[in-house]
Length: 177
Image 1 (cartoon, rainbow, N blue to C red):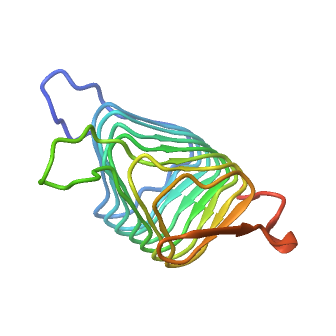
Image 2 (cartoon, rainbow, N blue to C red):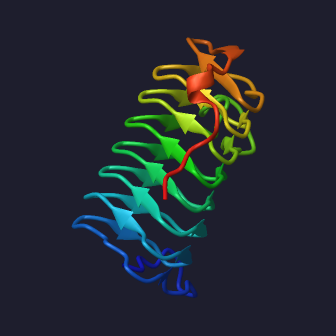
Image 3 (cartoon, helix red, strand yellow):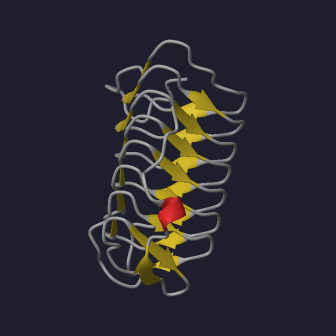
């Protein structure tokens, strides 16, 4: 707890009723709300803000300078890069990858992670490219590769993802609490 990334770093602030499992590292300069739960070997890096009732699964990485709302479930093996925003009532399935660098190593690029608005669901093994916004209430199917903004209340499916009307069974948002 409180891995110091710089000499003047403040200890992490973690709310009540946290369950932080073995191998997890939470850096300094992190603020976490109540009812926080991790799997084993999770990582939460500096300058990250996490709301209440958030699950960070086994081997999940939140690479810092990120905001996560309340009632969020990041399943096993999720990667959340620097400069990402995740709203409330969001589910991100196992091994989903969010990215923040459009041209790794090849070109200068201002790192910009995706934005997942409230009530978004992302299926297992989906990939979201830098700077995309997934609109409120949208559903990204398993294995989808999201290369552009997803409108609110939309289903994104395929590689690259195509947009479809959200089926009635998937409407209404998430209730993770």
